Image (cartoon, rainbow, N blue to C red; front, side, top):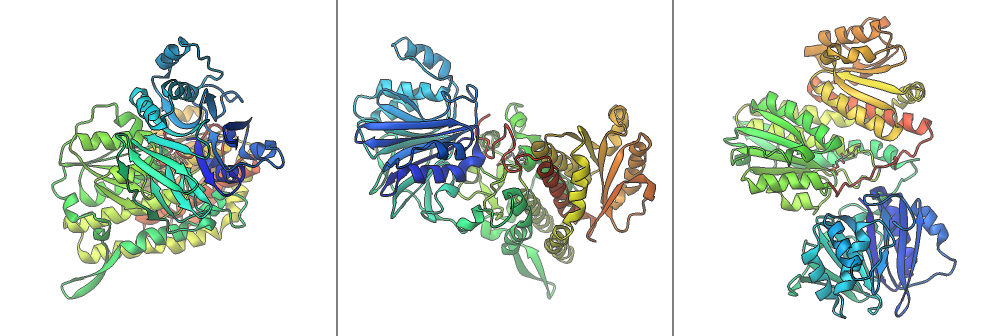
Length: 613
Ligand code: F6R
């Protein structure tokens, strides 16, 4: 949450910062600001409530600077006001902050007692006050001393008024990546803001200090020892993080799913000979995931947040079906405080697009500390969760910019399928022939998604109907229930229509009383083994007048009077139905939001990367 960027070099810093903030805006968008050196010891700060476009408009014509810092905010401490917008200044110090300082109240009391008066309600300004109070001309010492006093999570970019063209940075919990290119040195919370300058970057490690100057970046440990940062190269280019002719990032990302899935699945397939027959099977050895990871497991725990957790719900069904090992799925923010029972025979799988979600990261740390085996499914290379897991399976979805996750979700699903198939084969629960068959079916989802994308008209028509709704239900059983949870979050987060996902069989235990002719119900019925039961549940809501949108298969025999719209997903084995059905649900959510005239990519109150608890 919150996007931060710092630049020092030969280009106009105001331009570099605002362009970078526009790329980072998905991380927070309630206010934005920059602070730049406009003379050797003069720092000018410009901040506005609203989006980065408003900040851009408020920068005076001809404003130039060679060094500065910029921030786009997702409010935590204090409302959305100009005073609470970053950067914050105190004395010699001007800074931007991503994270939460947990002990800011006690620090505020201590610092105000020395005569410093905060002008905002933020914890970040207190951090600026603290660093200023510790500054006697040695920036490193002040930052070190401040780090010893600050509790919580932070990524800071700091200007000292008497050190022109220099930016100091430190992080704990919240991410920072940096690069040096021909225009100078850049640091930001996410690679997308660096891409136009360099494909080579490094992740600043926790408790290291980076000092950016136009000629280069120096990294030291807190103890002052020099560190040689480990550079990595991004494999995607700047166009991956642009809209490329689509109206919205979400629409573009929905359409990128066939590629995202191919990139995630294909490199993990290899030929294997068994009894003189050659089979194509998942192979995770190049990812450093040995078959022994799945041996002697008593239990698997999948933990994540939001959409990533919904992918985990699908993972549970797959693992239990194929491996016959008990699996639980836990919301990461609950798991971390539940004192879970973990040991070396437990595999904890964390799932995260960003790899930075604070609760998921904390769950992973807890699992490792208690001796569990850990495996993460992560999209962002080099992110904290990826770096701290024993094993990582990267989804190769490419950068996901829209706040509502789409391609990352289906890529996470495909990762679960690969892991489940490989583990079942390794544990001899699947023969090579059966595993190869399932693997070939997984590959067909790519063309199925192409088919769904060509069938957009029906989802737009459904969207036109849903825009009038105040409440809505998604119902399904087994895999379709896991998918209902995802359909519901997708719709509510971008259309602001209240919706709930319900296990279809559970409705009659209370919730059926809410079903009236005003309530649309999206019923998912793609699973043959529970189809008859599911149709009975559709009858129950229909009998109460519900407007029914049925997502099912061509083969399902359903009386016409039971639905208002029927979508048949492309023909596939039931196990693979979630992919096509998910894309239909994403398109329904997308059209509903767009037709309601809402901000599809940046829904209110949300942010893409949730690095606070
Ligand atoms: C919803 C959505 C969120 C994220 C959740 C976890 O569309 O995107 O629910 O899935 O915040 O984020 P990551 O996957 O980055 O850990």
